[in-house]
Amino acid sequence: VQLVESGGDLVQPGGSLRLSCVASGSTFSFNAMGWYRQAPGKQRELVARITNGGTTNYADSVKGRFTISRDNAKNTVYLHMNSLKPEDTGVYYCHGWRQLSVSTGVDYWGKGTLLTVSS
Image (cartoon, rainbow, N blue to C red; front, side):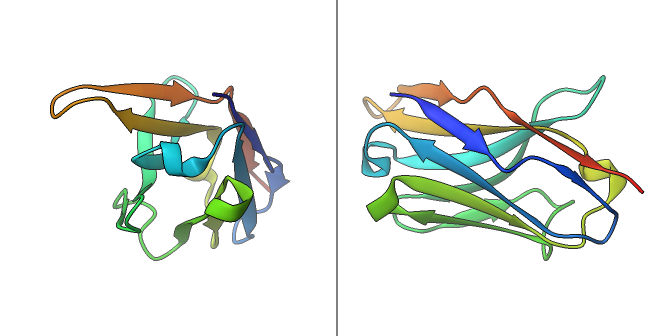
């Protein structure tokens, strides 16, 4: 299974952008999918996550500005980003998690797409 991100760009503060992540297999095969980001010099952090059942959760820093969605027919997960701030700058990684048992699972990662928010 491969996850391929796209959509990263240079955006001015206050702008909007949509990131896409296409899975080579069905997104149904993942129990949950999400977006993480890594800013320069910082650890990778969860930005947003969506389960197969449609439950979403967001980092406090992006609540009200970012929306995660999935189109299972297109095997694609999106991250819609509004009111972008310079602190949103970073490499955004698509993540998929497949549960194997009650206590174990497998993580899948894309290679990342760069978002730079700057004037």
